[in-house]
Image 1 (cartoon, rainbow, N blue to C red):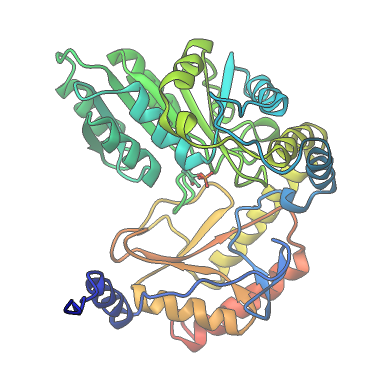
Image 2: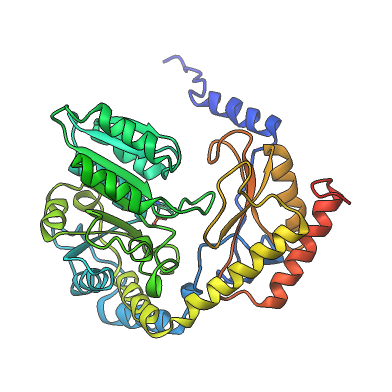
Length: 405
Ligand SMILES: *Cc1c(COP(=O)(O)O)cnc(C)c1O
């Protein structure tokens, strides 16, 4: 038999990677060698970590660790099935009841991730004759869910209520259902969705109102209850999504709403039906995390104290931290806008060499020309660490001509 020489059908990927390298936006993964903490080691280098979503330091909280260990000893390391087959454990039900009480809603359901919660929910509740009215900067998981639903997607300009109304009005005589959807906190700029105005519009046009509160969970509102609590729009948001992967410190996503919404998702949300449930240790750590939110409100206070300090100091140094070319941050997410992708990646690498970990984010994660270093404050950064990080940012910023001398 003649030997066929097979050319690699994926060779075009190498070409695309070379394009990224030429543009200067190619990256390698940085590898964390110890705990997710304000001072840690990435790639063998000790750095001040300004890049994690571990807002409250819960990834290493002793109560969460103990809960996880106890669950492993009692129940093992895996759940062994999807929720609808044999993979619903008592801990999963307990966590969902806890979340529902915390968020003051009838019921909640946990998904493998926040991404799966959004994508699975949007695609389950809408179909091809429906309409999704979506903020331009909504998270990728909302966009993917919208595409999977096959509903018609109408995008409105970022936080622009009159444009959102225009979009709603344009389909008000169509028979399909309408879903109005926004992030509670936008993950790249750290600004808030205009929830009271959006709720007004949803009510006026009879639309379903949905909010993705991934970056607000544990950060905004009383004890970290989220933007619905922050804006006091309880009862006006039909579908609330949150994550267990950021401030809560473990992994997962959840949806909150009426008992019937949750029951429906049990039957129709594909990531719930077709992906194995959380290991018991993850469910147990999340349960402990909600206890910590109630018992240690000082963590959220410290997070905001650090956030105020950090924003003030970065502004004084002279960085563009949004508010001009991009929306102004209202949360612990503080972008340092540089604009150009290559400069941003070079700045990020130079900061790393000097012991500061700030991730460079460029197109396609943010629009072309809006590249930035995204910094995130946590409750566990000390003042001394933040002052050191500011010193490095100022020094490297001047050396690279980003700041005036
Ligand atoms: C992080 C994030 C998600 C995804 O959450 P995971 O639990 O990490 O999958 C969804 N929406 C927004 C706005 C996010 O920032």
